[in-house]
Amino acid sequence: MENAARTTADFQNVVSWWNRLDSNRERRERYHEVSRSGLDIPLDYGAALDGEVIPYDVNDVLIKQIRKGDYIDAIFHCPFEINELVSDVDLSKILNKLSDDHKEIIFNNFVRGTSTKALGKIREQSDRNIRKVRATALKKIHKALLKVLLSRKEKGYPLTMEEKLFIEKALDGSKGN
Image (cartoon, rainbow, N blue to C red; front, side):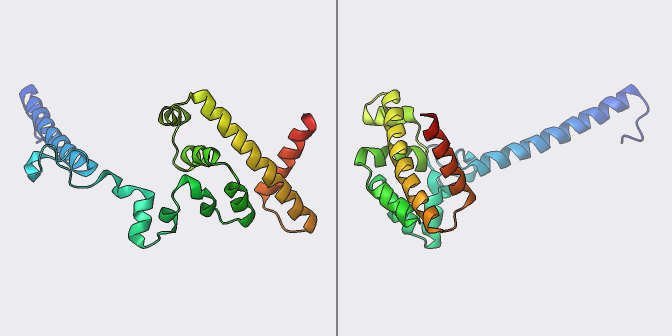
């Protein structure tokens, strides 16, 4: 059709033909996107307006692990058992010694990714207070971890690059104070 077009009317016919094909393609894409989102299901699939076919948490990491048969992270997905989520024995002991408030804030902020503002609303505290408690808990963890890493270094145990950088940064920070 494009090659045979010679007049303005022929070209307008070609343009309208391409517009029609383009709108069909966009419609198919739109239906595909709506169908794949899991949130809005077209009524022509027979779904109820307020119904849900696929649960929202089906792609949640813990749900995927449970489906695979790996239950350990799901069992210990609790602020008061945060020490069970780490493999290092010394770090597990450090986390276990934290107060329940510190465990709860550290777990929800770092593991669950809850913002300090949202945590403040949940705990009926200010955002600033949550950040202050988090900083105190991290300071306790860093202080105890530094002792453990320095002990390992003195005993000649191999350290990872991150552990070496942590020691170096902590020692440089303590010299500045």
